[in-house]
Image (cartoon, rainbow, N blue to C red; front, top):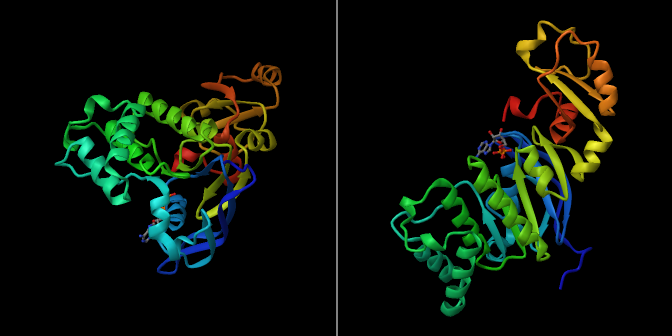
Length: 302
Ligand code: ADP
């Protein structure tokens, strides 16, 4: 039964160094049952390192962690049987078919054969892969492989689903399908931990998130609350090629020139005085929060 206040994950002052180079520094956060929690940041921010420590694939240098009541460093094997994990490296057996791969994993999990069969059928249908049941892995597209890794992650009917950059490199249709499936999983009262460098993904899926940069948690909160607190309103953006014509007087020292205003009418009023019109006008987003907090655009090193 779902208990909304129950903590599924507790991370306290966790740090990790590789040969004395810090990858994660003093990270602390909690994840409640039934929420989708995000680690958002550019490539190299420390998201995978953090998440790998959370399912016991990597040791921590200092700090404390509990995931589903277990310490991943001490009980990694037990923990990995209780959670679903989707990473970039899919480790599927190329020579075997879709259904054979799933049967093999079900045996590893100790799921009885008849239960496994109906669960595999159900999950392949859930991820729109039934028509590929007997296809060999080597013949699947990148998007199908990622969907199959979702099927595998859901086989144990996990309490917690950990997704490391689940839609990186996928086309928009597969991305949307995966988002829908994550939402459906969450509606069943289950918990999701997600890393992403896509602001729209974080904004769409996450109830709460932390923004990570250079191994450090910079901000913590609900996406909408972070936007309202740090940069509510609308932004106009001139691309670099347009900047020569402008006077470059506003907001952050980002590569593109930007003008932020609390309301659209205020922005429109100020734009009347501009010699060139901006390339983009849009409501502010987590992209702008990231820029404000780090001084860099997320795409600058993503
Ligand atoms: P992200 O997942 O946000 O892209 P990572 O956690 O992969 O970031 O990396 C964080 C930092 O740790 C980076 O500087 C990366 O180069 C470094 N790093 C990650 N894995 C290793 C490793 N196995 N050995 C040494 N350095 C690593």
